[in-house]
Length: 104
DNA sequence: AAAATGACGGTGT
DNA sequence: TACACCGCCATTT
Image 1 (tube, rainbow, N blue to C red):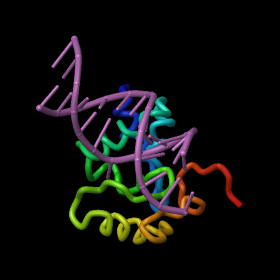
Image 2 (cartoon, rainbow, N blue to C red):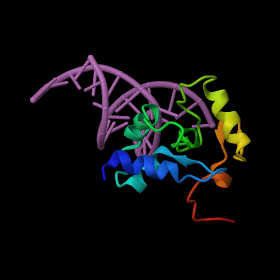
Image 3 (cartoon, rainbow, N blue to C red):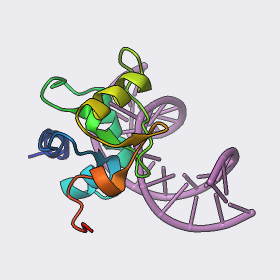
């Protein structure tokens, strides 16, 4: 199992209505500082329909990346459509972060 | 094999 | 709070 495959598996497990950060995926995959590599995998993901890369955002909820059609706007719409709280191009991680243990 | 690139993250100013 | 730098990893050239 390579780091790359772990990343894809983790991203595939992100439930609808939740999002994860690049750093979080990297950490779960075993390399806490490989966030950049994770982003690279999302960009060149060979399993586009199976890997919901639009559910992966920056550590502060910033919607970076997504070079697809419509760019950031499309990503934002998709997330909102799934029930994720999005405010000003940023995801409300307090409510929509995946694997967030703390819940008030 | 070495250097450059990129959908990042943390720290400093 | 916002911007700039440096460090990290995998991939590409």
